[in-house]
Image (cartoon, rainbow, N blue to C red; front, side, top):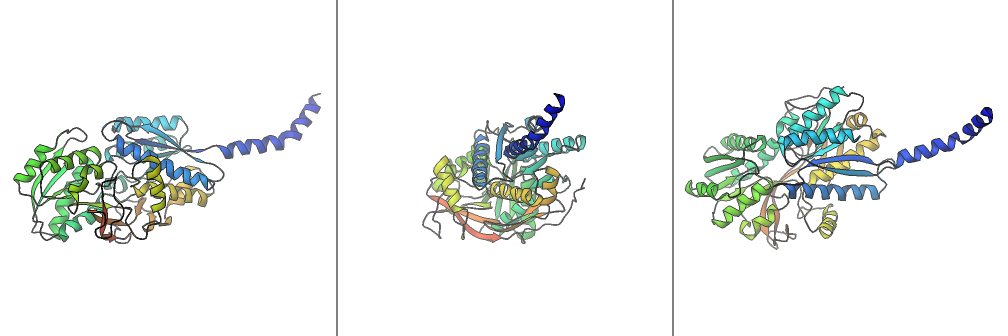
Length: 413
């Protein structure tokens, strides 16, 4: 009887293995999105969640990767570094080996440290941190490591573009700095002072204020100081609700200073800017609906039709496409093989060629200097957030223009 059972097992073994292989192939490839889904920056985090959902749906519709679909698992970090680190552990406990994060460099530092520690302790089960927007340069300079890849320009690149826009306007003589009091905001203030000193030594910095991130409800006192200082321009790294409320205070007080805000294109801010920002609010943007040519436009319009909000953060598209390309190149979804395939990977992106620098895992990509402009003026066809005002390109910096020196080389395992 035992011999007969064994023969039956052997006879059916190929079919069992086939079915097991099909089941494994059908398992989704999970990505944990660790960003603020509640609290003052929830609008930005939830816009990213929907944007990644649309990207994954598009990739899955064309067959996914090796027969498996991409799956997004949202985890709310409440814009708190401690919660961000805890959510990395939650993801690991669920067997998720790809971490997506962007909103807040303070949270980015918490994620990269948690990932680095986990991987040191578990070299057989490493996870990858796919950074699509935490912009502090340190993440790919002094704190770079093999398991972190950034799919957006870092702060120095962005501020080089923005301060070039400030320097280009010869009417600007007095600049007031208003920034969030954390690593990104302090970096913006430092870069603005150093870069403008080199590009326009005649410009005077007439104010340099830092405020608690996500805590200020009324920016009128800050705008009053701008008026008192007779500033021609405000430079601010504020984003999300902090920028929207700053813009609101500027509108309410009818301040005439131009506003240079690199992250003014993020969800919710254009609606707050409105028509009062036409021709005087400027941003450093990676993509907008009025770039030409624009192969991403149809996808962005479909996103707007479905979710009733704008698709505006190109690094989400680049992350999804390049990680998928790396998986196919590696013929594997195992993070170590995918990481190796990502190094040096080049992609013909919607705004031009981009590539992942292997030395420090920093993406090189184009940046646009833009100005908020009424639809119908200067070639602006598409508005932002139904305001009747959209982004117009004033200058484009190619990926080659944005190359910075290598100051950190990742240590490969």
